Image (spheres, rainbow, N blue to C red):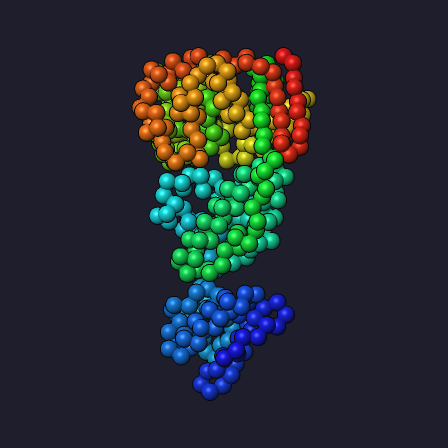
Length: 380
């Protein structure tokens, strides 16, 4: 037996029934080629091909085809695994319990880009780079790109556990540099009216909810009627609804009440979503539509949807809301311990008292990107 590199791939010389036969391993890694060789030899000698992983199975099939040997039934190639099926496997994996909602958000974008039927075997470094570059051109930050790359990596990790693949192409792509890419943004109340005026009708209440509540885009789009209590002025989110994986309650500011009242008036049969577009759940990429609208507004061209969340946090701080209460409302994904355990339980009255203190005329608009070193200031 021998392993010889020809071109960019390693080829295997395998002795079977006293004959030496050659077959390509299909990999550029010598270590991986040795593993494939071991699996092929063991399977051919035992005539048991059930334990072969995907790469070794392909190599063994190629070997049989090259020699003109009949291919055993348990060696025949199975239907190629599609991206859609791979995503289902990843989301249902026990280790992803509690963060499936966040992963699904990323995978929805990936599937939209490549298509559900895209063979997972064709998703490699160039394709992942292409996808991340597209997200970068859409305005995704370095931090977001790294999180999306990590989600793709988790998909391949689950596939490896099922012996479908043994390599993780996401690990071959360096992380994006987050240093010097800090962003600071604040939108004045007057400029926010300009934002709302520029948005499509279906997007207006979504942006208003972000501005007046500090909720994340995903939390807003996933909001269902049963989670909103206008009588209590409380939105209740479960652990699966939040990025940080902890349940939380969001108090409803009095300026947000009429917006939610109007949104709840629109109903669609069998659809529990609060926010709809033409009577259907919203599947469009909200951030893309938001950025396109802002590109036409003087002084707000670089404003992002997520900047509305930063604005709420600044307004809460400038209005004197205690940090512990503001953190309980807004939530932070990088905190390992739930707010309730750090500061003690907060009842609805405490949350409502805090939200009623928040005022939105706390300064002029500032949009500053650490990368571009750009700043825009608008007067009311």
